[in-house]
Length: 432
Image 1 (cartoon, rainbow, N blue to C red):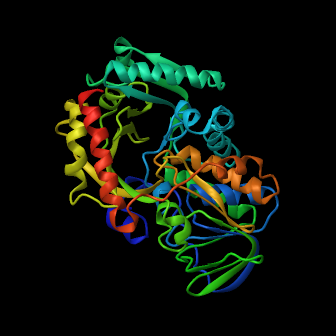
Image 2 (image 1 turned 90 degrees about the vertical axis):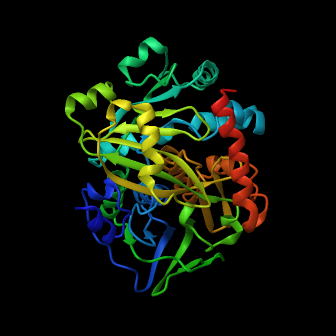
Image 3 (image 1 turned 90 degrees about the horizontal axis):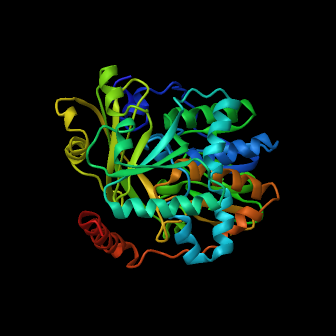
């Protein structure tokens, strides 16, 4: 499928859409249906929760505004990065040691869920082990050492520090001074993962309706979700729209901000060149505040992403925005052609911690994974399912954390956030 065809099929014109292994078109909702659970959003969070509940024997309906995996779940860097967008030591300073230990106990589970489901449901999504966090400075390396020490106290034994001499076995770039390898991380084709999970859900009796955006949610004791042409009556509703929630529920959407990230994918590299650039076939992200991330694909392309667009803004020319950083990292790829360039939004919270809670006793939500969504969405999808099934202990840990609206309201939140990001970009450039 070429980029035009992929876009016409409803997905962004990405490498993932062009190499998706399932092009099933699911019907929109027409008329009224009933289920135990109605899930809004067929991305990782929604499908993960729906699958958890279907495995427990609940009847589930999923409403998706466009296509399964249309948002960040089908467009991201495909990196299995453990933990959260803020380190456990930051979480401890903010929320205390009890909360840090509770969140730390869950912090490897998202990656484990992915591996378990890939094996259980035979999902073909190019799963590969290994994630590498690259340091530009000695300061970043020292911070990684502290992060490793904290992680190890929480039972993560898969971390390994790498010095400059060890870099050659991981990444062929002289930009870095070292880094930290997470052997429990990895990378996947994210769209094929969520499509495989959706098929597993349907095999268990779950129903998915595409092209069916929710336009109203009744949060009462017998909640109803309405679309343009139908309605779902359920016992519980799970709101999992994330950065694509829009203004459906302003009481929660005001606490997240859509942020775009841009990705390019090169033409396939010669196998020898691909192995020379990333010898271990780990995915890589750097340690800057506004970071770059990259990896090899199954067909030996280099997929390279980075940049931010607060409020969901996008550059006019994605390749022009991202290619210079690719060439800073890999000048040996100066002549390589870029075949795909796309963008997508993730949801940012002011605290950079996922926003989880209840709108009523029957309506639950989770969003705002703040750039660490591949693993966190799987964890929180499971926790949503647990809560609906009557086991809300872990859900309540997340729901107890404080969350705030972005300062400045709708008009000024984006410019104020941009000003804040300038400060951190300057710190990255100065190495402080």
